[in-house]
Amino acid sequence: MPRLLFLILLAASLKMPALAQPGSQSENSEQPSRRRGGFGGPIELGPDDKQTYPDPPATITRKRDGIARGELEMVEYESKTVGTTRKMNVYTPPGYSNEKKYPVLYLLHGIGGDETEWQRFATSDVLFDNLIADGKAVPMIVVMPNGRARKNDRAEGNVFESAPAFAVFEQDLLNDVIPAIESRYSVKQDRENRALAGLSMGGGQSLNIGLTHVDTFAWIGGFSSAPNTKSPEELVPDPAKAKKQLKLLWLSCGNKDGLIRISQRLQRYLNEKDVPHIWNVDSYGHDPTHWRNNLYHFAQLLFKPPTDEPANVKVPDDDSKNAAPSDRG
Image 1 (cartoon, rainbow, N blue to C red):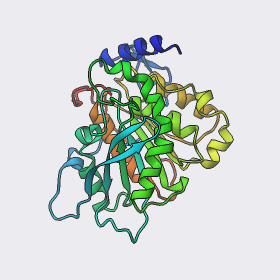
Image 2 (cartoon, rainbow, N blue to C red; image 1 turned 135 degrees about the horizontal axis):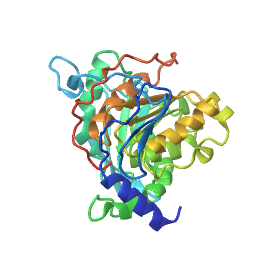
Image 3 (cartoon, rainbow, N blue to C red; image 1 turned 180 degrees about the horizontal axis):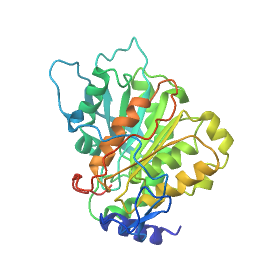
């Protein structure tokens, strides 16, 4: 896609809010239901577009007394890709010790964010502290880098003009970020102990990078992935290899999100090619509540033995639920 066209489409898709208006057909029917959405026309929901994981309680990001806490630190590293010193936010779990080795989740932000966005949207350190304290997630290191790989990597001015720098980040992640983490922290250095996930533009990056580097990442998640996401045929050219090597592929989007067609396109292809994945469509738009909730569920599956894909849960059909205000992703 030409650069100018890509920027126009991306700007339109993220600036135009999705409008939650019921369609003329029931979402539970076998025919797709339609809702007015943002860029790309009506949101069409098919029989597969259902919520498979329930909304967690709001307390998932509430700081609790009486539990051990991890640490969050801003780390600098030398990026040969960009030619400068860059920053990333790094969470280490409670009781982190050089005597142990830990798996790593690389967590990517959206086009309007930076290395602090996940902390602002999801209070990620508290979320992981709570999950680990409850035994729901294995102790892991969470790396939140800046996916805008250029010398001025601040989200300022027209953030859509920085879209090409998000593509450059692939080399920064593989050649600079991961080596920096593996030299500084006590981590397991194999594909089965690396996960990659992100929101919106970062969701597209995670799918683009992760699915084309399954020799590096075995756990991949895209939350309301943006139009930077490559075509399914580019992402999964060898379904048999993907099926064999992927430990988890998580796709999610809100049913009020005008970008849902991006994730639907990949999900339909994966179904056609019989590639296992989880597809979670909740009742939100392109907003932090969706991203936080899906990170909560995704994190609980990481670095664990495989389990059967969950049966559809009974989720209240309540269009009156109020999502958090939309924010650029």
